[in-house]
Structure formats: C-alpha cells, structure tokens
Figure (spheres, helix red, strand yellow):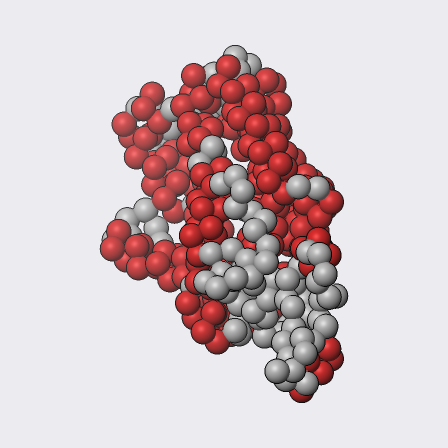
Length: 364
C-alpha cells in the first residue's frame, strides 16, 4: 500500500492522478485489508457470553461504538485535507487494533464499553479516510471501473439512486411480510431485492458528492457524507432496535400466557436460549422470527422520505478528472486547439516550469 496513494503526473497508461491500474488496485487492496481488522464485531457474541452479559449490556456494547464513529468521522475527514492521508490511515489502524486488544482483554462491561468507544473513533477514521483516498486517486467517472461499469459508461448517477430507492422500498415491503414459518427460498428472494437497493444507492451517492467539490476539500465532503450516514444508522439502530425489542417481548409474553406460563425476565433476562425449557424456547424463537417484519415495514415507509429527497437532486455528470477544472478555461483551451492540465494543483505547483492548471498548451 505504501507509495501508491500519491503518484501524480499523468503518463501513458495512467489515470488523471498519474496512477496505473495496478497502482490503484494496490491502494484499494490496502484499504480493504484495513477493514478486515473489524474482528471484534464477529466475536462480540462470544465475548458477551463469557462476561455473562444481560440484554441491556448487549445493547450498550453495540451502541457504544456508533456515536464515537459518528463524532469522529468529520474530524478525520478534515484532517485528511490538511495532513498526509496515508499516515492518518496508519494511525487509525493502530488505534483500532489497540481498541480490539483492549476488548479482548476486557473482564468487565465498563472496560469493554471503553474499548468499543476507541474502536468507534478509529472506524470513523477508516471510513472517512478510505473514501477521501479513493476520491483523490480515482476520478468520479473512472471509479465505476472498481464499483460498477454502468456508472462509468454513462457518467450519470441519479437514475441509479432513484432505482435503488424504489428497489429498497419494494424489498423492505416484501420482507415486512415474513414470519417465522415463511419459506426460506421466499425469504432469500425478498432479501435479494432488498440488497439491490443499497447496492445501487450507497456506492453511487458518494461519487455524486465528491463530484461537486475540489480535491482539496474532498476529505471534508467525504467525512460529512459518512457522518450523516453514520448518525442516521445509529438513530435507526436505536429506534428500530427498541421497536423490535418491544415487539418481541409482547409476542413472547402473549405466547407464554397462551401456554399457561407466567412471563418473567425483563432487561436483565438471560440471552442463552439453550438454557430455556423446550416449550419456552419454541415460543421465543417464533417471536424472534416474527419481530423483524414490523421494523422492515417501518423501514419501507422511511425510504419514501429518502426517495423524496433524491428526486429533486440536481444531476451533474461525473467528471473524468481528479480535480475540478474551470469550464470556461477548458472551453477556451479546446477552442485554441490545446488541452487542459487536469492534475491536482499541488502536484502541478511542484513540477518545475509547469504552467498553472487550466492554461492551454500552444496549438500545434
């Protein structure tokens, strides 16, 4: 990954940042490897079980990282505009590994919560910096070569956002009809439609944002976009998680009452289904299978708001250059039979004898 982020100066076989396809893949591979450090999320259930956590503890551990992630994301994005992005990525990885190690050695819930906050701060850095680096080395139009050929071919993004929103509404509406005894093949087809929506929306919204700013501000723009997405995600997890918890509790209590069993538990109830009697276990599993349908329906209604926000957005075709180029000077250059230097301004300034960006070359 080292040495791949800033190879300015276009040459044959390179993009507008002066990087070959191989260099871009090396940088993307390094960024992808950084996200593989999120192992604590996979091991969280085991950790919680060994610490004998309650449902309330589990909710706090899940939520602890989200506000820290949201608060840190715009800060990391601004730092990306001021300092070396590669160094900042390395720093965020070190912080995340430290938080993961603390989580692994945690023997109490407060220590585990502290570790999760540290992880959230680091994840905010990885999220913002990865997006800023991608925006610095790949132009919005070229980015489709690594996230979808359709956008690169047409240079248009709004149709994909609208289509993704419609698919997401349809997918959420369909999954809102599932119960614990719904056929798994049907569930799979519903979730396939559900998954197409975010796939079309999330990867195309960021290039649309970065397409409207100069490269010197791309860190702040990327961080801001990630910030609002993270805040929305945190709010969604909190609100819909509470709705689902209430729904599942209601269904469980009704099932237990129907079976002649007195409901017990509450926020400090056990999370270990294996320890429950078989008749109770069946009731709880059925309730957990029926509970998500309500939050899917709520999500479908919420997506109507997202669709209403996408429709009036002004579509600006994705540019093929890393940095923004003044349209007037570019037109003058083309009219004079010359070309426009599309390298970032700092790279141009460092090159001896290089004219200012946008200056037309002498006509041949």
